[in-house]
Image (cartoon, rainbow, N blue to C red):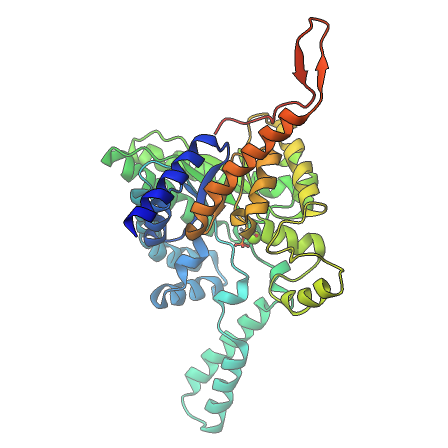
Length: 396
Ligand code: PEP
Ligand code: MG
């Protein structure tokens, strides 16, 4: 087995010398980051911070925070979450040893953080039947009223992504503070971290600007308190068609783009990412679709929006950093497409990092072959040059 492993390692090393795309991993906790590094990930391309709050002790605080009507009350709960969140990031940074870490601000569908209406209704009915504990009953009724207030018929299109951070800016402030404080701590340990703070589900430049201004304000204040000067980036996911077609405007405020092809596929096709599996197989047998667009990147629709976003982003900010962190990031045919688009990196599940490294090398070789096969134009000087332009690369 160790011989096979060495062979595998040497093939991967060869691939690393050929590929142009960097390969990062999606990781939320230090264990995943360690696995990602062991497969050769060159950074974290997506840390979904909402996953950090599902532990029993944290979800309770999170729920109370979301349910609180007053900002001061929410801030009190966020103060309890801040040290935990800071430790989360310190853990990730330590594993990544200076490689870039992209941290996405909270992006849950809201209902994931709320108590279930049905459960509350049952509890209330039981309390009414047993006619016991009137104060508890009143409390439950108040809670149900608040849950009803926040209830959404379509949470995927509701108060999620940056909409949450805009309506409750104290959440963004807590997270920005934890990200920067953790990086300041690492700086004191002698490890330089350049956090990439990512704003989710941006559709309008005004959303991006509001969140970026808030993050910068908190970051400046935090660095002053620590007496540490850090470099950090603030960018966005491109996961809504509106973001793709207005990318030139969004790039005025965003220092990087990361394509969230899960949501971009959902919103481009209008297919629910949670329910489409119910008919996609039928669509394939009926020759309506030739593959599942959530597994293999759709080049015509989603891919075309990606091209539009890249052109727009580069028009405003020629060296804008570009990546992908949707599930497609680990699919070999999608990796090839991302290479052709000239992205800087793909980010995928830690276990797909090896495959992505190979796929990125294959894509680079395939492009070379195509370039070689192209008819050469004779220049007046007599020199032969390939017809196509090289893929424009941004600095990573
Ligand atoms: C995406 O939408 O592609 C993405 C990476 O974000 P999430 O899957 O968390 O919505
Ligand atoms: Mg998304």
